[in-house]
Length: 300
Image 1 (cartoon, rainbow, N blue to C red):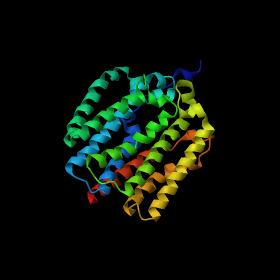
Image 2: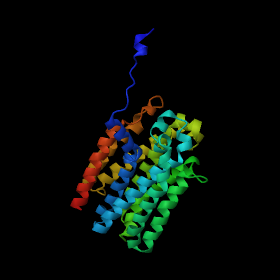
Image 3: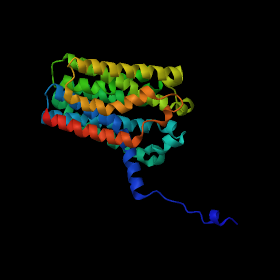
């Protein structure tokens, strides 16, 4: 008898590992998404010198809305994610089906708190509140599920991931639009598009078995080419705006922190793209970016 096999020890996850897993399932893994929402909305306030207690709370609420959107996305992705071991492991609602009972409670709580803040901005706040929750539902939930409709998946991401939060802040604070706003919106639109293309390339093998999107429709080589072109335009637009003196130099460190991910998109090839951007680096970069954004808000 094989004594080694007979005495095999099963190693259970440590307490710290379980805590970290729960944190990831509750939103930490999406910090590069809702964290960017916080940064974008804060920059809108800094650009227009519109930082007050009311608008600072607005930034937190908009960020919470986006956190909820990504969390609900996992809820509606259960049937797709359970078909892949990697995605299933990181989906709270696959690992703990009883957590689905919390959806109405959590969504209701975020909606209620959001309503209190958005209503303080009058009818404009009502429009934003309605749009936020409409897009959450349209993007992830059937029967529309825009994320599974090639073309509309990219359009929704480009218009609402980074662009919409910036527009919200400028519109609700009744600030005057400037050329800098247009430049930043152009950069945010393209980086939102790139984020979706990057994700679809990373998950291409899984998505071809479980779902449909732009990448599965047009193919991996074309999607990669579009990503590289779009990322190149982001770099070019940013350099031109910086050289023209349009972008404040205080914003440069944030661009520097975003550079590693852009380089990853530009240099990686089909054969090794699925390795992805190292997750621990993403956490470090986002933490630094959030801290620096807080400094900008203090200075602004």
